[in-house]
Image 1: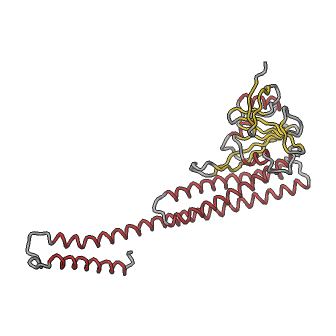
Image 2: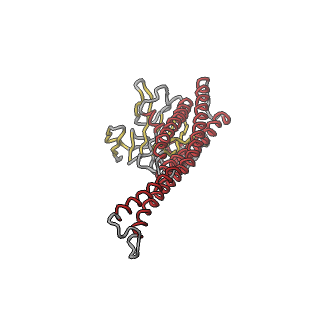
Image 3: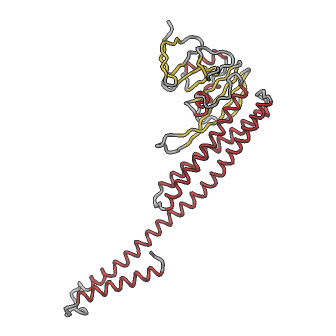
Amino acid sequence: MEKLRTSRLQGRVTQGIPEGPGFTKAVCRGHAMITIYRRNGNGLSILDTYEPGAWVSVINPSEKELESLTTQFGIPIDFFTDPLDVDERARIERDGGALLIVMRTPRKEPVDADIPFITLPIGIILVEDLTITVTLTEVEVIQSFIEGRVRSFLPSERERFVLLICLRNALLFMRYLKEINRMTNQMENAIHRAMKNEQLINLLNLEKSLVFFTTSLRSNAIMMEKFHNMQCLRLGEEEKDLYDETVIESRQAIEMANIYMSILTGMMGAFASVISNNVSVVMKFLTAVTILLMIPTLIASMYGMNVNLPFQDSPHAFPIIMVMAIGISIAGFLVFRKKEMW
């Protein structure tokens, strides 16, 4: 008897879906999910089993689901496991009738994370008139297609679909790069007054994100060049225009990342000097205050000695000594003020 699964997809609960030799309508176990989509007039619809021209979205599959996928399509299991490796580089690989495209995509981490942005791999497998995407977790690029934010695409037009994913990925990089630049500008005013390393550490984490972005964008650009050199995709005139646009956006994203990296690197060096200078200013101020406070302390200490001292027999000894201490302190203050120690 076939097992029954309970799966959640986009807030809806589907119960009683049998697990057969094909695919279920939505298989979700924790964060794992296999969903088959087809484009219709109203957007994407979910299928019970695969059919030519459909799109299979695979998110964090289990070992059993990987075995089912490899058996169903005769695809090497590496085509599914490689995109699940967070360190997998962007590349193109062909094995028989299956084509694997791996690209890096940006991901925004939660607010409490040390590094605000990271990159993750996306695997796109083209086989038997079917498109399969493999990701370790939900990524914004794929979700934009699922949620209908990209309207002019058909999963059956595989070449165009792949190029649209690449284009949306490049645009997402640029959007996050602008957000990194905005975050850097927000930190700038705080760093001018900072005397701790917290702001510098935040800038260092942003720099790590830019390193991830730069490395991923370059590997994506190399992968995009192989589209043309290997002729792994059959591109028509519209697809060639879309490919050219994707290449241009990718190059622009690389240039933006390099510019922001240079700005951030220079800014970190400058702000490190600012923080050091702020500490020096505070220490100079405290030193001057300490010296001024030592003058009346020294006079009071001298007049506390059990020896003959000036004015000791005068009834106005205390006011005279106080005026003397205050006068010398004021003179010291004016000297420090003239030397710009305040």
